[in-house]
Image (tube, rainbow, N blue to C red; front, side, top):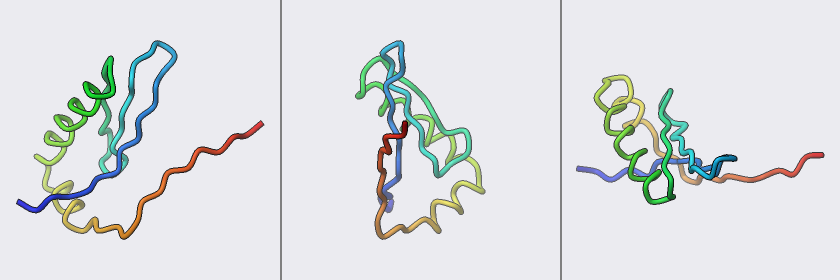
Length: 75
């Protein structure tokens, strides 16, 4: 099986939980008490997303050369 590099976004919320999202797939998000738990959980959610044909097709066509994430401070 071909390995894919997927973008994920992780934020720590006000309750101390790590909220993680894979923006490639619609409604693909999870959380965990620790970063490791959150990443494990998003892997499970991604596996569920890949049970849908449209997401399999999306993944096959996803071949970014570079992915960046920036944080902007805005007052």
